Image (cartoon, rainbow, N blue to C red; front, side):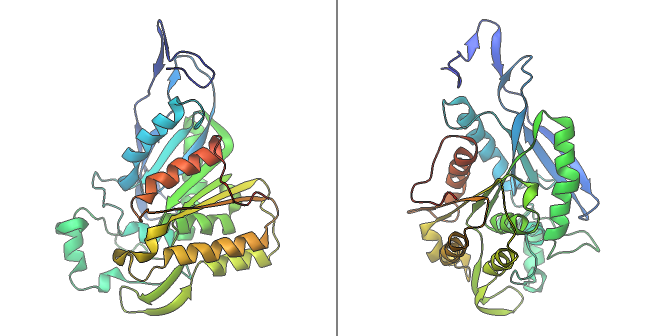
Length: 322
């Protein structure tokens, strides 16, 4: 097996090293929360002084183990992706469900549908003890439990990115964001409010259109929570020079009962139409829908394609490249 420039991966003592995952517990001054940050450096040889782009992924309690394996495979093949540093943003727990509630706070802001999970009878008991909710963390006493996206964005931009740039061999400014579902919605929020935080945005299955009753009893009818922020940005006539957005969804997500009132594919197409018609100056915009994929099965595919598009050689046919 050879690397991207044709060199054998093992030559005598010149052994390709896979550094161990490093973990940091970071207490945020913007969010009343401690975050678990996991960092994977790319495979490299001893003495290699190269610097690397960084891919930041959310929901790391669910996804980091999956993405680290995918990242390794992408980086050792010929053309899929160059070396990059993978950073996972999660919570201090080994439970994959640790962020099940806190993610709703981190990713939400007006006009996101407002819901109060604490108002659901028996939810907190379940969250702390049984079933799929076991291991779920709750917001700290006195902390926000919803509409915390602006605080979370400040944490990433003012605390996390400086930590990573200061400790690891990064290419300053060459940052890619990946978020799925609520994390995808947060990615669009960041794109439209502080676009220079990342160079590339990989947005997977964002929740943009809501029709039904939210937890806690608030009812919404064809609630357009995503396009509002897009139209506000478009009306500002601002440029997104040097910014790339890859947005994707799974075709079967529209029909999943577990997703309740969310109309993920309809919302995706509405956002894609608004964005493509706007032709925002400087934005390289790509879209992709994966036939036969659900909200869960599309998650790794969106990461693979998104990283390949942003860092590798993949092109998305019938998409828009301004």
